[in-house]
Image (cartoon, rainbow, N blue to C red):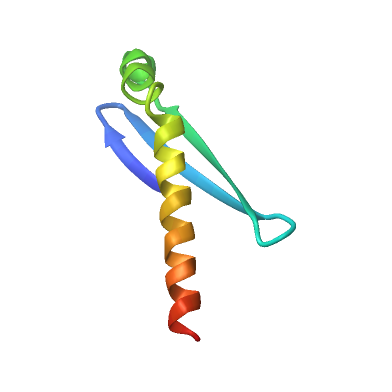
Length: 76
């Protein structure tokens, strides 16, 4: 989890990794904006992150696959 302190609010990013069949993993991300002043940031967070979330998750997944493949090659 990554937390970002804002003025009167906190923005949290949480990732969950769930093992699936056939050497696969489901990655989900939860973004939480909370605190007394959270409403003041809601539009900014939506505008800043909304259009990039899918690509960001794709990059995380690709980086994990690359790291796993490198590990497997090194172990041979």
